Length: 392
Image 1 (spheres, one colour):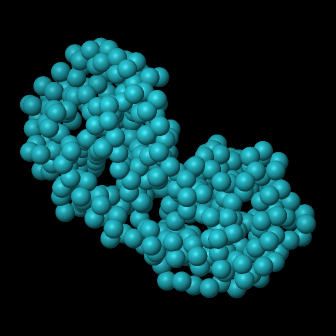
Image 2 (image 1 turned 135 degrees about the horizontal axis):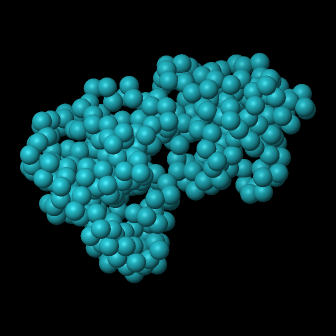
């Protein structure tokens, strides 16, 4: 959809929902928000996932401003809810994430808009949250509106709101470049380009620990989402097992619906891990992270494994090659056909298993890059600048 058509659609929808929104605004005036803040953070849920972890990191960076967090989507597991335990939270998913009663969603847009508009110097932030975009047309012009984007998934939709967004932050350079191309294609006014920013995600840099595993320990960490193509990793593991290679695979995440653990008894399945200490212990004791995704931003697990000095083996998609350079600080699978991805993955892992000097060298180079780029101090400084200092 073009920018002009998307804006027209947005305005038509605005007129249709207006009666419900106005009732919500009246309610918001009659029942003011008790929580005293000027910072409102819109997140989808607290499910396990890299984007949610980044949302929690941003919340901690601005914790001194007493932000209010609004969850809007029904959670699948709420695995990261503990990361938000020190914040004031309004979880609206029971009320607004229901297509049968969508008018209630319109009502709460009015309620929240009134609460936000009544505060002094309000700031609204959306971290990969559809409801954030839905709120934008109902906010007064003075509200500072900040968007964070990790993947191109939302771009065909979010283009309708770019005139309402004060600042757009991208966690990878590649994604920012995609948006610039989208703007050019739609002849977007040059003033909107100045609203585009890039900020690296952050991680804590752990102590470097060497491993001496009898077998090459390979892990997959992530959701069992279609784009992850975990079945290709399973195929790689099976081939290596049949070749009697000294390589062992472990899977962390909800992959059991894709891979039957009973058929892969030579692998270890952890399921979802909620204990951060246990998760990082597994990172530290492993040798390799493998990804066969069809598309990716920059997953936090890649950053963590780089910081631990481990080797990342991944398909060369989206932003991955910006951080993983083949035979410099990791290994990239260049094949695009699934059968060839499996064959290349097998070959690259065999290379690492046989050449321990190469494995250690690639891991140390990755750690050096992680230390340079993923500092938590820099991350917080840049987000605080965007939230509270920069003027556009």
